Length: 143
Image 1 (cartoon, rainbow, N blue to C red):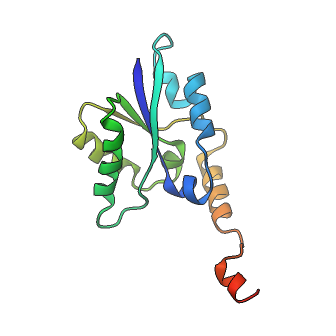
Image 2 (cartoon, helix red, strand yellow):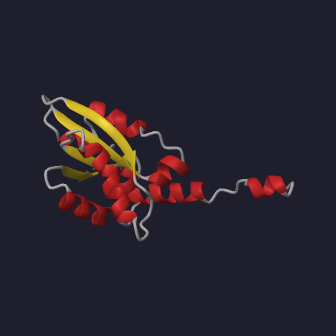
Image 3 (cartoon, rainbow, N blue to C red):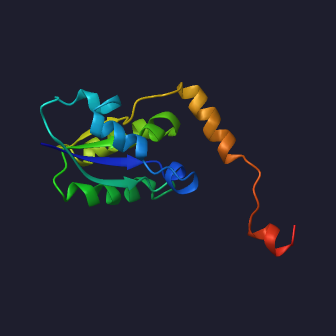
């Protein structure tokens, strides 16, 4: 049995409301990056955590602490979500740091199948982030 963790993008999960439904569906159906596992080997999703956000002076340290929350439960692999694959400019740096700190765990970039091109996905995400919306300032100033 392969014990799997998923690392999601905090911008996608916290700001855009991604619930990891596509990642979980494709894990169950063994599509996307999960197709690489042997069909006769059970997959056990141990946990899902989100990235601490784009790096600051403590970004890498915060990421290691979050991953450690999964590694304590004997995981075999951590998948960086499709959102991280498509959007994160630090994914390769994170992957190298994670592999160095956790040499017995496989780190795989990607989860669910890609349904649109990466460029189209990035455009849609950017458009979603840039939508005009009201904030608390608008309420306070009665706009």
